Amino acid sequence: MKHFHKSLFFVLGIFLLMVSCGPTTRVTGSWTNPEVPQQRKYSDILVTAMIDNVNVRQSIESELKNELSNEGVKVTRGFDLFPPSLRDEKMGSKEDLLDAIGQNGFDGILTVALIDKETETRYIPGTYIYAPISRFGYYGNFWGYYNHWYPQVYDRGYYAEDKRYFLETNLYDADSERLIWSAQSETVNPKSILSFSTEFAEMIKNNLKEENLLGRGTTEM
Image (cartoon, rainbow, N blue to C red; front, side, top):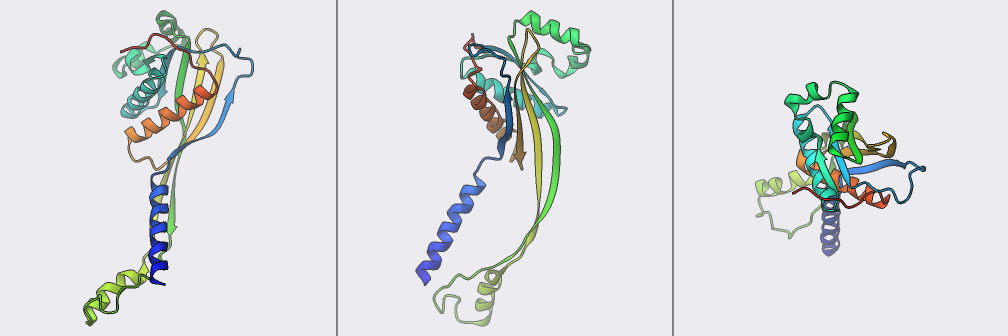
């Protein structure tokens, strides 16, 4: 019986570790324009995150640049083309933006937008725990007995707060302005801006590769 409980706790511990290390970002839906020729690929892309938080914007654009550059795609961050101090001035009109895109010779525009966010509070119920030990492992006195068993008899419940972020990522053809590809994703309880951006960028890159939309250009150093 003792060996059974030890094995049970070991398996449970491994399972919880796997869950805690699992991905926090997933694609919930995607679409590819059926009118796009199969041979059409994008090798010079402007990446822009339309997010108010400057740190998040810069992190997302940087990680997308890293991931796409590793595939041979030339990538320019919107943060570099339109820094925060000049963003309002340079992006005052659609014409100004299109002029900047045309002057730089991009063939694709990849946008990321936060479309919704939710906060949900849930109750995690407590559980009864039984962890057998040797008969006198708690030193054979009342306080030893009490201090050993009290925290193990019942693990109190607690409230947890889940934060969910819903993003939409679109790839546009720079010449025609047509929407080529779109994906909606959900991120739950990101550990940090960097960890989220890294996981998100890898996921987007993999989806673009699966749709065969990436070409090879002259990557920036």
